[in-house]
Image 1 (spheres, one colour):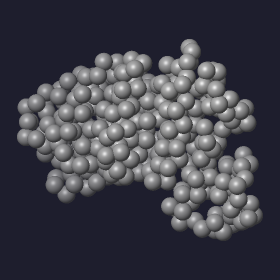
Image 2: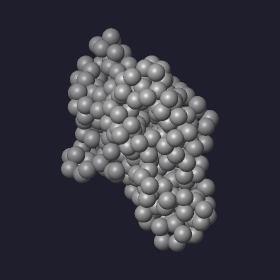
Image 3: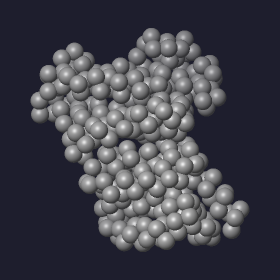
Length: 323
């Protein structure tokens, strides 16, 4: 796999308004050295990667995109000979993906998209020729990588590309029978439909996600609530209320289980946001304000200003104005 640290760091610094010289001054590094790193001509030291993480407020995620020497060697060997794929290599790829997902909580999607798609392409290419006992695990990581690419593209409204990748992610998840990943990709299709102001698509895709075999209870809870919002916007109020009742029956079960690693944000506090969207769709504006406000306040500090929360803040504004 390619090292995309330089691309991500350069774009993230630009999006936060840092010139090369200003960034160098802020982290107390020679501008010429930083320039070589950010232009991909020199590998950064761990110290510089940590300093840029601190400057950008990315909480270690930026440095996490930089594989260690051992992982780089494993990735290089497996890329050259997919038949030699081993568990440590798959773990290394999964670790890089985790770092990219955490970056999405702090930087704009456009900063991460080029590097994510480049890494995703490498992983899918590796999967095509991989064999042996670790291939299924790689397929799961590939599905998650592909759906993450689709999610980023959906946020940036590159709709056609997003739809294609999310469809591929579902197929990869089905190939290995991973209902959690399949449900999450369908969830992202529902998100895109909401961005497109298509309540039919919102109701359809979130319902499909909620009733995907193998979905986690926290996924099913959130998906039912968001399906209810779509149904309410379509005027199917009774169906929306039934969907909400079904969701509320899952509340205790979902809260008793840790969220899936591939959807780490699905906490009870996060699903307060989804409950708020459902109430907003039903015109219960005071309830919507209460749930969305509590949901935002209950997010971990590092997630409260994530770009994906902007949608919920806009929903809160609309509910407040209509109350």
